[in-house]
Amino acid sequence: MSRVDVIMPQMGESIAEGTLTKWLVSEGDEVERDQDLFEISTDKVDADIPAPAAGVLAEILVDEGETVEVNTVVARIETEAGAAGGGGEAADEEEEEEAGEGAAAAEAAEAEDGEGETSEGEGAPSRERPAARAGAENGAAHEAREDGAGVATRQERLRTKSTPLVRKIAAEHDVDISDVEGSGIAGRVTRDDIMAFLETREEEGGAPAREAAPEKRAGAAAGPPAEEAPAPGTMRVPIHGASLDIRIPDVPIREGDRVEEMNRVRLRTMEHMLMSKRISAHVTSVTEIDFERVVRLRRKLKPKFEEQGVKLTYGPFIMKAVVEGLREYPILNASVDGTRIVYHRNINLGMAVAVNDGKELIVPVLKDADRLSLMGLAQGANELAEKARNRDLDFDDIQGGSFTITNVGVFGNLFGTPIINQPQVAILGTGVIEKRPVVVQDDMGNDTIGIRHMAYFGLSYDHRVVDGAMAAFFLNKVQDVIENFPEETV
Image (tube, rainbow, N blue to C red; front, side, top):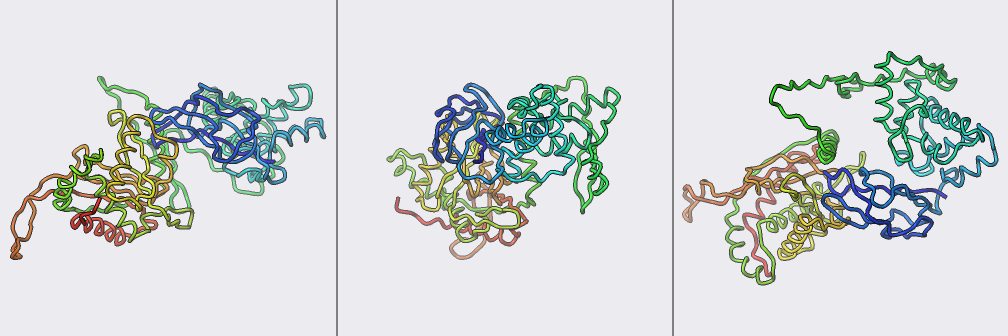
């Protein structure tokens, strides 16, 4: 047996938390993969969340009506397929019954460490240093001894369980995790909890360090000393195999300035954007496109679309041109997986939509855009935009994008240099379409000044896999399709 974590999903890049409104199954029920487990409500989306695996719903950790941060584990599913020693609670209890003493409690705590740690995989053997593991074992054994029965209770084991990062920090600073007040689920100690504990200890003059465990002393003798945490007010940046602590500048606050803490949405947006900038080597190329052909074609087709109840904007024309560009240059419809490039078979276009009076952003995905006509693109885009504004998007509506388009022109901007929506490798920012004087040729081939509907398009791309020439070829293809758009039979 092994267990699979069920997490609170992130329903949009700026969504920081969600409310679990209703459980659709009960603890102990058998569930199928992709079967709806629970309903959630966020600032932008209400959705049913499917099961990530088939099995038995072994444990519910979040009750109906609770609001939790994204990526919080809300339940666990017990599956049939699992590696030996794979961290299930039942296996822990059997080990404890066989051993029956404090040593077994430490072994159970170590087995629990393997459960639900998404960074190490289900049932995978721990890859932590002995010193880091000792901190968690000390905590579990300490709780077991206080219980008086020689075996830690399930709640106590949950409390001392934590992530490898937390256990590493605890070991490096000689902290017993059981001494730290946890704010996570069932009192689990988070990184913020242990950092706050260390800060408090330093302010109080520093508690004397406990004698290091034998494992820790051996580890220190065998390997290099642990790297110290960056000083307060600094940010550590890796440079050529070393690291440099860069001081974060203080902001002077003067009389009349207004100061407010970032809300969860802004913090989540900051995290997502910084993550993308650190992962991808961002470069932006800009081109100017003549929309005169599309403007006239749209004017001609609008009545026909309106007869079918579809509003025709410039968006579907741009999508059609992007699809043609991605077909010809599939590297821009890809993702990077470590040192591998994943070329996506389907062209799924993400459309950035501003909601809540422009204060927030969500990116619904138009699936299989390469199979849609101009009418299909218009219908699909309008439906997704309307669902986004009314908070009616389903979970599937915001998943699986392979390329994103964001329209900065809707706010009157000439062009933008957008940040890539991970794990994609490119994003197109479309500027305002407006009349401008440009040099054109008359029927005789003479240059003259004409009035044309023009727009700037900015393509941000990941230079790890997309070179400037390839980005230019893609933009040239998009430009060619728009400037010579074929009239379709709709």
